[in-house]
Length: 123
Image 1 (cartoon, one colour):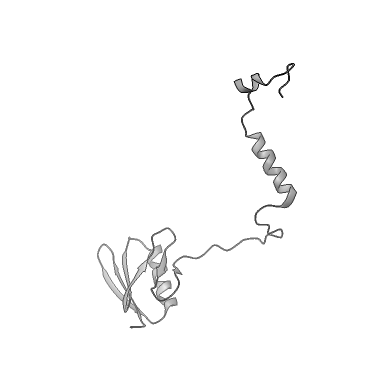
Image 2: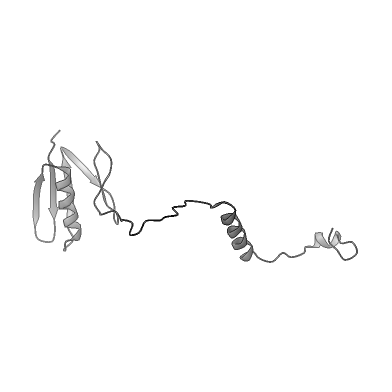
């Protein structure tokens, strides 16, 4: 298999072919095309055609390795000192129950309940 990466880029007026020896270089090139205008149709080869995923978060999808992001992943601006994932014990359960109850429709009596009444109280 050819180890070099080849990119064919076609825009409104130009067909450009570029070859890159490393994955990092082809990723940098594809990122620059994503930011450029006009729109450019790109085909990537590395011995065989290499798929590219759909936007908005495009990945290069080599058949012999994991997906490679063609975007900068977000970086956390501030550390989370609590870093709690999921429920938070009784506090979380109580808050969830209160939220559910506050958004529940009021209970109503049914005809079956009326049959069960004894001295004005539901049994």
